[in-house]
Length: 372
Ligand SMILES: C=C1C[C@]23C[C@@]1(O)CC[C@H]2[C@]1(C)CCC[C@@](C)(C(=O)O)[C@H]1[C@@H]3C(=O)O
Ligand SMILES: O=C(O)CCC(=O)C(=O)O
Ligand SMILES: [Fe+2]
Image (cartoon, rainbow, N blue to C red; front, side, top):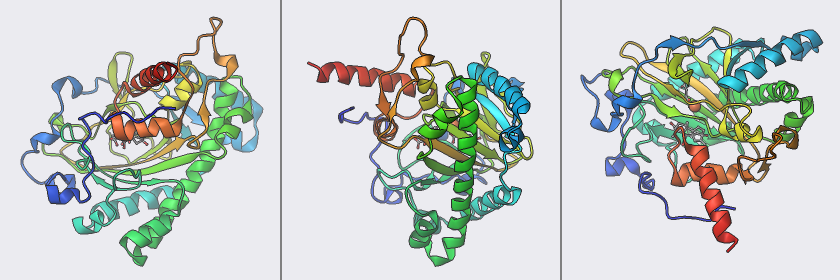
């Protein structure tokens, strides 16, 4: 198990009331200025525009829902190709009521356009994955993302969390986010069945492993930006989680780095974007890819996305199925738990495109030092 190591200097400790230290930057309050603060600048090497459009496969879940074997086989084959190359696919006929999808986007817009003091009443506190964040400026001091987030980590009632933090009148908004999360968890298990079939470990293998999974549900709000070419909505990274199910509104912004270029994933009405995360990549011993992606912003329109991050129960051992270890028998990652990886991302390493590699190196280092 990873022991605590002095945190690096690149993540400031979250001060109790970050606004007092003037360390918070709120993009909705900066959207109508002529320029953006330098804290939002990203290196030119990271802001090159996309040069193409990803032809992400559309996986039709109708078959899973009706048990149609021939349709399932077709989807499973398409899924395997996508996950072996870039780890992104769209799902349609996912069974989630359009009203739940739209209502969640609308409630998110309502929250982010509220007065700052309301948003700060639910500001994400040190050590918590739930609450409001303004450009993560309470955590980072440079390369700030041009976005605001409202996140909820599983383990409690979102309705109660909203009510107790913001007042009873916010309970209905919390209930909308809670219903959305419950629907997404159900969808997660259907996708896990297809992933199990696609890796020949059986329909139930990942479904059972993730039956008691946790989640982090996150509303992203990207206001329009006066200088979009200088910043990032969400910088290049791979998701450290097992799987991400993303609802994006019909405004372009999501891009994947694959085939040596940044490629847009265009919004397809009625579909959800799904991507393999680092944790699931480790569970396949790199057979399936957790791809680097980002969200860019523009000067004309705000953009919302709702990310549902699927995480294993905190103390469950993450380890690739034996049948997925190649003939050389080499396991690419030490066993780990989500709790260890989450702590690494929140205390020691700002998530980027190298998180899992750095995390695995640290585990091996600690493993070797603890065995001395
Ligand atoms: C464990 C996590 C860290 C981030 C949330 C997540 O649950 C999965 C995705 C991660 C993140 C969104 C990747 C981009 C950078 C990041 C700092 C962000 O922009 O929010 C990441 C999240 C984090 O809070 O560290
Ligand atoms: O907003 C988006 O389109 C992507 C956001 C993202 O990648 C994330 O929150 O991990
Ligand atoms: Fe992501």
